Amino acid sequence: MKKILSVLLAAVMVLGLLAGCADKPVETNNPPASNPPASQPADDSSEPAGKQYDGVELTMWSMWSSGEPQANVIEAAKAAFEEQTGAKITIEFKGRDVNKVLAASLEAQDNIDIIEDDYKRIGTVYNKFTYDLTEMAKAANYDSFSYKCFNDQSIAWAGYLNAITEQPNIGGIFYDKDAFENAGITAEPKTWAEFLDACQKLKDAGVGPLAQDSAYCDFAFYHTLVRYLGEAKIEELTMNGGWSGTAAEQAAQDIIDLRNAGYLADGAPDEFPSSQNKIGFGQAAMVICADYVTAEVNGNTGTQVNWGLFNYPAVDGGADNGAAYMGANSLAITSYSKNPQAAFDFILFLTTGEYGQKLADEAHQIPADSRNTAPADLNGTIETLQAAVSPMTWCASLSVNADLKDTIKSMCTELFEGKYADGAAFCAALDALY
Image 1: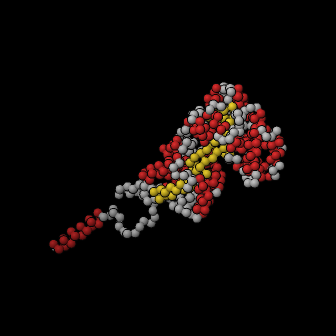
Image 2 (image 1 turned 45 degrees about the vertical axis):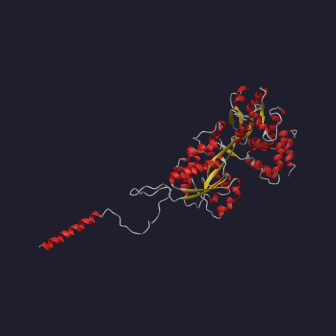
Image 3 (image 1 turned 135 degrees about the vertical axis):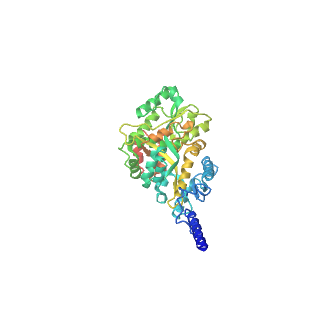
């Protein structure tokens, strides 16, 4: 009887031990079937929590050179991102010539996760090597704080969102608000007639209405051409001729009329940057250029101009009155990156919030995050970008004919110098090149 009781007690003890182990997994030496995505770290609640991207390594090729303000901010953002997430990021500062080696390196699938270059090259030259950012951007609500004009262009070129804007640029007419106020100009001109009226008021107030350096004569005239013709028509004429008898004659006449009315600043077109500097010295009020002109003038003249910006005025019957020059240096992720979510998170970390503001302040640029604040002398740039209807390139349609582009650029300078009797004569001279 005692023997039977001992056996029963032993059985009960074994059953108790088995019940106590029922909630514990069976330990094996086999690895898990798959690792969780880098963007969704595993639930290690039973162990000390690791950082989100522990073990993740990223390589970025930058278009900046070491020591430039943009490079300094990138380095600071990298250090902060590594500290917060555990990722390790290698930044290779390739400089402005990165485009000369990037396509071949992407073709070879060199160790690159993030590339940085002009947004048009990313959209048109590198697009077959770039990652589709659509879903990640949607999850981050990227549309709510970025610029539709750049996103739409990226999608138009690549077929999907393949670039995140890092350094936006906007062109138009930058002006001295104080000069406008002193001349009694109460509203930014929106039409050519309003622009001419503003020019006359500035002239009457003793200020040269429009500064113009020879380096940018083609860019200034291009604005007028785009208004009348649109970029596609300009490209057609640049390639094939046939300028005479088109609205290009009126575009050229508008420039001639500006000169004849005395609306160009004294000496214009000057050698760069002599004419634009006249704004800093109170001798001129407006200049047709891109946003960096404000820092150039302030720096060259040691002044702080009270800058404003408006889009180039519309012309009667224009083909593209809503165009504005827009450009950007942007960031993209390689299609073969092993950690695209980590790369995307770093890109947003760099271009938004604290480090996005640092880029705006320290590199003196328009913020890529529209929730941030533009430097004081770039007032109006965010609003102009947000309102832009269609993007305009930097004289691209005047440059497509490789054999003639330098000659055409020189003729644009001659137009501002008064070398042509009228718009018809200018267009006839262009046609004589073919």
